[in-house]
Length: 209
Image: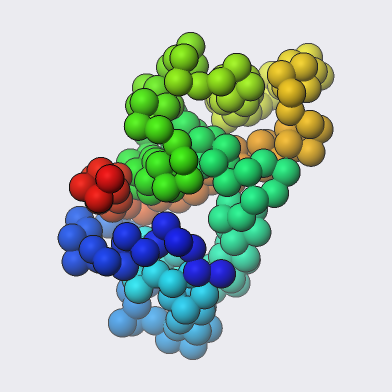
C-alpha cells in the first residue's frame, strides 16, 4: 500500500526539517527492538516512506498501542471510505489547526494538497474561514460539524446531524466524520504533549509544486 504522496518525501528526505528535542524521549528507529523494530520496518516497506514519522515514535512507547494505531490509521485515515481521502484530510487539517498542533496541521495540510486540495482552500481551512468561496457548501457544512465535534461534542444534537444530511452527506459519512475528528483530537494532543514540531512537509510540497 505504498502511498504516492510519499514519493516527494522520499526524493527530498534530506531536506526535511531536522528533528528537535521533544518533551518526552521518542523511540528512535536506531534504538527500536523487538515488536517496535518490526512495526517500524513494516511501516517503511508497506507505506514506502524511508523514515518513520514522529507520531509513530510517540506511540512506540507502548508497542500494542503502536500496532493498533498503525492499523487504525491505515484503514480510517489513509484510505477512501465513506468519505474520500481529500475530505478526510480537510477534517484532519482543520481540526489540527483548531487544536494548535503544528505537527499534524503541517503533515495533513501536505496530504490535502497531494490529494487535490487547492492552496486557496488550504489557506481558508488553516484560517478557520468557513465562509470562503474556495470551499463548497457541503464542505463548509462538514467542517462546521467537525468543529463542533472537536470543541463541544457534548452539544451535538440530532439537528446537527440533520443539517449534514440536508447538505448532501450520508449517515455513514457523518459517522466517519465523527471518527476522523475524534481521532485527530487524540493525535493532536499526543503530538503536542510529546512536543513534536512541524516536519516542514508543506514547504516541501510548495517547492515541488
